[in-house]
Image (cartoon, rainbow, N blue to C red; front, side, top):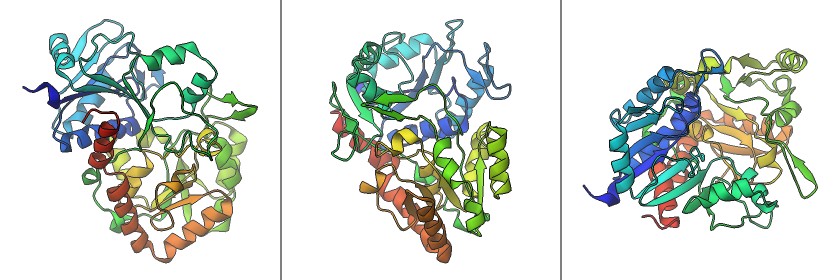
Length: 389
């Protein structure tokens, strides 16, 4: 069997067995499949898994294995994955010997989200090890500030790719340094998201984390926040200003803020009810009218060019997306099917525009997914850019 046809994706689905992470992985695997590669999923993080049923880290990886198997089965890859239990060292799915053979034959291994530390990987690929960064800015700032841990981690890779499509540009303060960074965007396997415009509910929705903690950063005199809640707060009274129903599947941990949003007409839904199951997550998106969401402060104020791998799911299903501009509007057309806003007034105008001709915007959303985020197109370009294919 040819060495030049095997690609391994390293990920963290077992560590965080949630639907959004599952679909992110599925889209990468599906795109590589369409390009003709023999693809495998390997998880070798050494980290205890999170179990959403008990909202805690656990020692037992049984639930994580079930989620991995469910995700891979959707692509006919039920026999093409391996998970190493960090506590016992035991391999599940493919055997350790089989994994070793795959790493010896692989054209490359894609370290999705930087899931694995190159220094602690059980096996090193004979081909390139590619770092695929889905949350930009933090690593770039740490490199600029001389953080040796970040430098050593990234230096363990042979190629470096980021979702920060506008990093290093004149209108973005975040530099690209130390490595030959390439830029990409989130892929979506459009064929896995049937056009669902006729099944729309009355609500624009999103699934998100309200308040992220621990990754805020200071850069050249500015503090940037690794959280969306600050950008949702100015939108609190939006339902009072539009007839469009708005729903957030998120956990607002401040009671006063939660009460304020509910008084203003937001529908707040338990996020784990949606994100614990791959199929439920898919149905939630497919039966929404569209997506309405804010973005993290750190990607908005830096104009990073980041785009959400959840939003591409909505687009693929023919669901118009109204999202906060991160600079992505330089690269992706907006105003028809996809809208970028910077103020509450722009957000309201986008909702009104969509609802004046919903079917046309639903078709446009699907077309944007096909043209700009199609998994095979996105991943083929990424591989070319790093000299792999």
